Amino acid sequence: MPSSRRKKRFMRTFWTLLILGSVVGAVVFLSNFQTETSESEENINKLALHMEQLYRRELEKDRFSMHYIPKPPATILITIQSYPDANRQLILTLTQSAREIIQRTSHTFNVETVNVETHTEELPPSH
Image 1 (cartoon, rainbow, N blue to C red):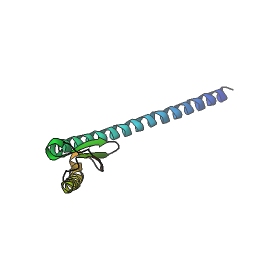
Image 2 (spheres, rainbow, N blue to C red; image 1 turned 180 degrees about the vertical axis):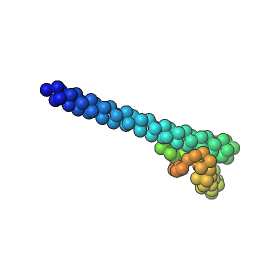
Image 3 (spheres, rainbow, N blue to C red; image 1 turned 135 degrees about the horizontal axis):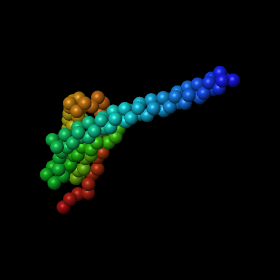
Image 4 (spheres, helix red, strand yellow; image 1 turned 90 degrees about the vertical axis):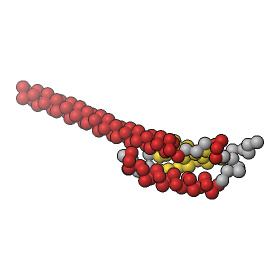
């Protein structure tokens, strides 16, 4: 009898430790994954801020505006607002250049992959 009691106790302890170890392992894995994701998103934010500081355009001066906004996951959104009389060719050229600059400088911010999206809005004519 004492042998079977010890065996049951051993098996109960074994399964408890196995389950507890699995839970702890999963928590550690997920916390590391979350840290990497957060760090990656933080780097995307820094890249978007860099673009905003150096390459933004203001509506009043140029008749169009361009802004750079981080958009999870791993995306920078270029928002463009323009009046009908804005120089469309200039907007297209600057948008393409911005895409290239983002791709070229992403490694400086420890960003392996970054997507670039654009959103364009035409404003009503100003008087």
